[in-house]
Image 1 (cartoon, rainbow, N blue to C red):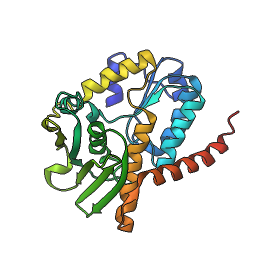
Image 2 (image 1 turned 60 degrees about the vertical axis):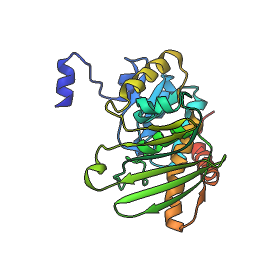
Image 3 (image 1 turned 135 degrees about the vertical axis):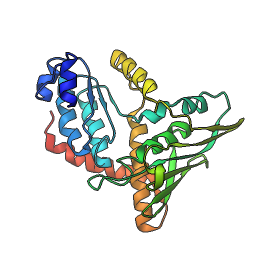
Image 4 (image 1 turned 30 degrees about the horizontal axis):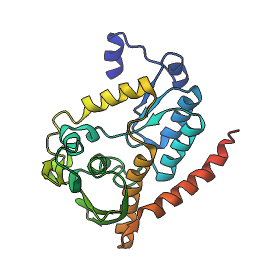
Length: 264
């Protein structure tokens, strides 16, 4: 149905990524299965086409690191982001008008897909929103998990605290996002997501395709996925988990995997 509607509007449907690459200057990788993204992205990297990859970026933190390693090797501009980074209240909180962000609580749906790590499938939207207002520098994560709810508490290196709440019950499991950024000059409520941040994301993507400059760094995205991985280890072990330890192990695994590609 979708394909037929696209064709009716004069949009050409390619039969493969290779065929697509002959027709376009830029690529948006929208495949939902993160397991497929390395193989698909590699074709784009080899062609040197700037690439946006939708969530989940990959199906493991090691693969997230590997994708950015490959992008660097092939010198291909690449980024990934949730649109919730660009909702109006997030932009207000990070504008500086209310001073420095002292902490934040963010909530959203967090239903899971068994083939992907916990939170990667949908919880990452509210996690990215949390990092959008807090910035990077999260040191440790502690998570409480039940069948219906996850609460992950991150402590940043400057002692600020950021909280993620993911829900899998009632209406909240579908499209209810929100939260609050605690700023020096008062709170900013993050509940106006009527456009889900898509206009802002589209604007950033167009600028990215024109300039080759990613609006979200690979280091930021790696830390976001590391936060989710560390939170899972936390509820499994019952202890806070150091994010840098998780990142280091993932990068080591990515380097070992990179050897299989035999890139000269």
